[in-house]
Length: 100
Image 1 (cartoon, rainbow, N blue to C red):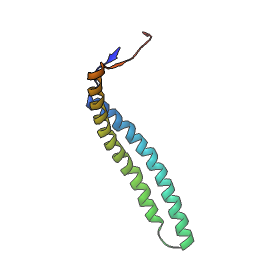
Image 2 (image 1 turned 45 degrees about the vertical axis):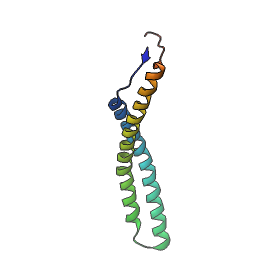
Image 3 (image 1 turned 90 degrees about the horizontal axis):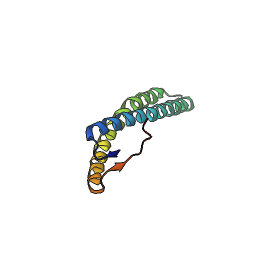
Image 4 (image 1 turned 90 degrees about the vertical axis):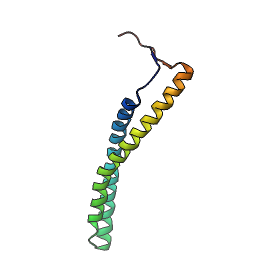
């Protein structure tokens, strides 16, 4: 089997989904760190700042998957175009299967 061309939009959609999932994971970690840090700061200073950590946390869970998904889509478009260019020159990527 030889892959001679990759449809740019199909690869871009796959990249967007994978990167959005990665963004959600990273957003969750950023959210936890922001909430924990804000809570510690509020206890130490006795100020009503814990809501700031909540906004960062919610923002990270919403914004990071969107940003990662968008840039993943762009990356998929770029990489599929580069692959298609290289495949034209080299003949494509050969994949061996066992016939199952």
